[in-house]
Length: 454
Image 1 (cartoon, rainbow, N blue to C red):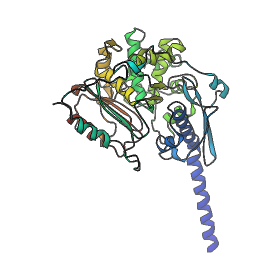
Image 2 (image 1 turned 120 degrees about the vertical axis):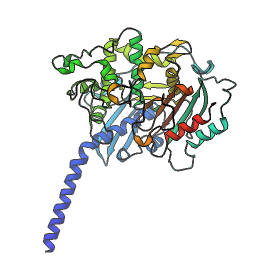
Image 3 (image 1 turned 180 degrees about the vertical axis):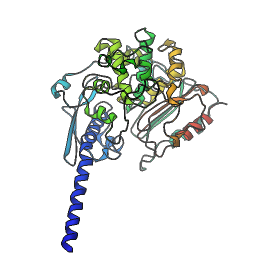
Image 4 (image 1 turned 135 degrees about the horizontal axis):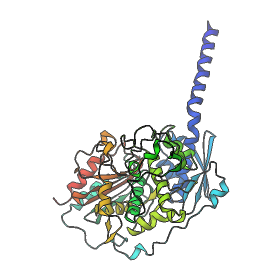
């Protein structure tokens, strides 16, 4: 009887080990790629310390299992989980970090891009284009209460991480009336914007439309789709995340999104290979694939790779003072529109101001008012939840914005990054962080609104 029990226990142990290997092994390279990519970008692009990157950007399970080794001379990071699943990421000047996959490492390292010079320094220019703040602020605001709210949003320096907020900024009537940062960070620190990058891509599309170089009603013209029903997908369908392409979005397991981001040299090609699952325009599905598909279509419309790589800077960032923001590319030099931008809290506030002011920034018509209206108009298939790269409602019902005006729209990042725009209150609120699990965005916005003039 004892021998039988031992045999059964051995069989169960072997089965458990087999199950763990079967379940975990395919995920390990995604975990290590995620960790190495996050560490490399945060250290070499955002100038964060490895300790803070591990405690903030990479602090959640299972990513926290990965151990990173940094080569400061080479500007690279290698990550492993229990010594397995090694992934290496290298940093390229002007292009950001990229995972070493099929493209040889030496070719990746040879790729660089000189970000265009904005032609001005913010040190001597007034807000909002520059960083010289006015001597007085708008009247009627309860600044004592506002500053208390912004203080409350940040964990105390000696306290255990709870609210996990990195930076907050409030713009009212085009003036920066309040900001606050976690100890060690400031107004120029670059934070990972994650999916707020999608909204930047929407703005880039609007700039091309304004220049007459893109027609969103047109079909994509992707050659690989010419022989099947995918040829009917329009650029507008993609802006609405209603392309109809088969796509599963989940960052905590093996999904189309994680395979694209962590295992693809050419993200555009990985998406053009997706099959059609729904009639274009009939079904809304949040898709980082659609975002990077749009990025590839921007590149096709621009036609020149160097102009494409600089387009976010010349058409948007430099015209609105976003000089502390960088977008990253994949190994094919596609701007990873779904996920990879790093920018300061003030820069994201300026981005919100662009839309608060109908596309006009300090007298410069960066986007047309019609395009701004388009970007905040609900996509037909989204049931009022999503517009064209902006959200209209919080994606999780437990975070519903029940005490906030209905005209709100916002950019939304994976780990709790937000740029809220509320035209009726002349308000932009930015919250950068690495979790929303203990941060109530509805209460945060409601309390800020209560400090403003009636």
